[in-house]
Length: 413
Image: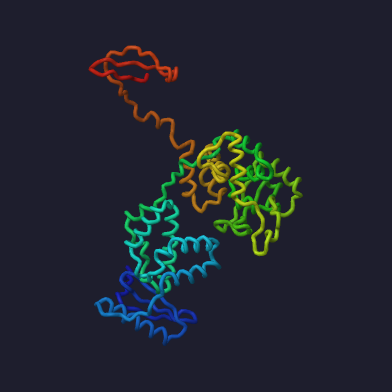
């Protein structure tokens, strides 16, 4: 039996040759840390200083450390770097400037603890921010601290040490099983017939293919194959520009028999070149530097709202997303489709996400035998006499009264 690998002791380290550089390793408590240098002498000097500081800190001696900037300065540089790697950098900067920076910008990374984070969470919830929005703010802080820890500017990530009682404060209260959708194809038909062009075509694509609004706008006629009845989804419109999908993975969806004549007629009407839904200004908007004039999500919501009101299908929570993409997923499951197939068609990263939103609609969720598992008669004993049926009760249900004792009790036969 091989000898188990020995664990490096606290405050010790080593130096190794890695390609053209030198790698040093050392242990601080239970964590193994790494750092790379281009020069061997510099790497050895850095390792000696690090191990000396770790040992001195362990016995309570003062350790000289370079001053660390405030979070306001560190976050600005971090957000600037995210422009090249993250499409959501604008939203991240807005959340930081409006919420995180006023609360934490004046502190150094190691000065933020669980108490300050809890006060921040409670203050944002008191300002009527939703739990989901607060969760996004905490996630942004956690991502920032992950970068600071990797660069040696923070000792650890305080968000990972938050107690369960604090995490419960920003847990989402949304119940995915209560998300509304168009419950049958008759409602889908009614909305389609009353929507004007091109919103009716976009509505049909979203409902019969389960595409997101940005993915519908990103479709090109070169992606539509009428011979194999398939559509390749590989791009979307975000902030007026064509870009990659949300998960950066293309997928293929099928053209059903109800959608085929709609797409065929739309191709004949538009010419079948370029985008299915062309922007008014393909290159730029009305002024220099503005995005292309693609249809905005707000315009889709307004058009659908008028259609729902005309069809008397208005319901809280019904919008373009729930009436198209969510309706597609719900009707797919109600028709007996599998979760694994639906996850691929909708572009979910995992079947778990699909089950979270649609598992409660499965037709085989309960067996017929499950309704008779508890076969026991709990009817009270006594003399049974007829009871006149109440006018609000269904006619097929027979009601009787059980007499005996001081109270009158009813029994559903």
